[in-house]
Length: 447
Image 1 (cartoon, helix red, strand yellow):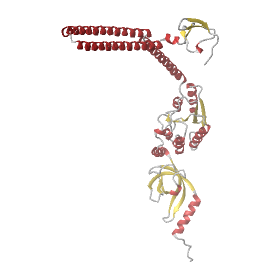
Image 2 (cartoon, one colour; image 1 turned 180 degrees about the horizontal axis):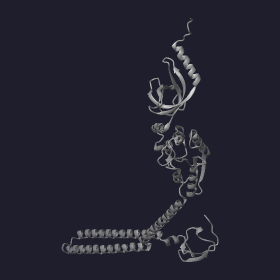
Image 3 (cartoon, rainbow, N blue to C red; image 1 turned 60 degrees about the vertical axis):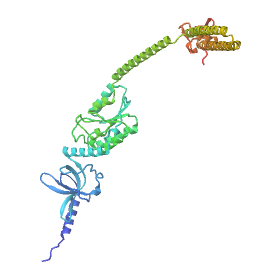
Image 4 (cartoon, rainbow, N blue to C red; image 1 turned 180 degrees about the vertical axis):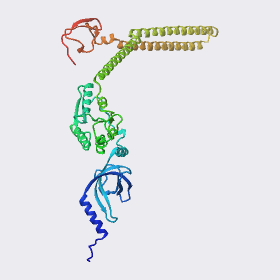
C-alpha cells in the first residue's frame, strides 16, 4: 500500500489561512470587546464575543488610530462593529480577525465615545472660555446650517422675521442625520466662510436619540467649529441634549427657536430702549444747562462793577489821607511841644551855641518829616492812579474809548458776536464810547 501524501502542521495551518482569507476576505462583524490587552508592541489584542460564541481579534498599530476611521479608544465591554479580515495565526493554528476599522454600536458605546472625545478636546483647550467669540449685537446677515426642508428652518425664519423683519437669513443646507451629516455640515460651514456675508452662524437641529445626534459629536466637525472665524451658536436637540458642538461653539442655545431669539434682538424692544435713552439724554442735558445757568448767575452776582471797585479804592485812599493828616498834626504838636520845652531851657541857660545847634537839629528833623510825608503821599497818589488806570482798562467803557463798539440785534435784543448771527436787512444798534446809532445790515461778509 503506497504511503499517503503528508503535509506538516505548518503547511496545514498556512493552507487553512489561505483558504479562509480567499473565501471570506473582509467581513463586518459586530460584538462585545473582552480580554483586551495592549502590550508594548503597540498592537491591541482582544476577544470579540456575543451571547453564544467568541473569536480572537487583533488591531495592528500600523493602521494608526485615525487612518482607518477608528476615532475612539477600544475599551473592555464596548460593543463595536468592525471591518476585519478573517485569517489564521499559523504558530498556534488559531483563526482570528485582523481589524482594520471599527465604530461603536448601541447607546452605551456612543456615550463612551462621547465622553472620550469630550475629555480629549477639553484637555486640548477647545472648550476654554478665552477662545469664545462674542455674538454680535445686531447682525444684518445670519447664516443657518440645517436641513432646508425640516421644521427647524421654518421656526428660525419665522422667529427671526418676527423679531427683526429686515434681518437676512442665509441658509446653508446640510443633512443633519446619518453617516454623511457631519461632512455636509463641515462643507456648509466652509461655504459660509467663503461667502463672507454671515456675521454669526447657527447650527440647528431638532431633538433625537444619541444615535440621531451622533454627527454633532464628530471630532472633525468640532475642530472645524473651533477654527471658525465667525461667531457660532450651537442649537442641536432639546434643552437636555448636549453634544460636542455645544461645548466648542461660542454659545449654546437649548433649542433652534431659542437660538433665533438669542441672536436676533426684538425690534420693538430696541425702539423702546432707544426712546428711553433719548429721554434720559434730554433730561441730563437739561440738568446740565440749568447747572451752567446757575453758575453764570452766581458769577454775575459775585463780579463787582468796576466803578464800585474804584469807589472802594477811593474810600480806602481817603481813609489813608485822613490817617496821614492826623499823623502829621500829631507830629507837629509833638515838635511844637518839644520846641517849647527847649525854649524854656534856653531861657534859663541861654547857651547861644547850643541854641544854634538845636535849631539846626530841629530844622533837619522838620525837613525830614516833610520829605517823608511828601514821599508817602506821592506813593499813595501813584498807586491810586495805577489802580484807576487798571480799572479803566477793564471797564467796557474803556474798551469803547479805544475805538471798539458793541453791536446789538434789535430783533432779538441781544449782543452779536459773529456776522453769521445777523441777516441782511436786519436792524441793529451800534454803541460807541459816546452815544450810539441804529443801522441796517446791507451785506454779510464771512471771515
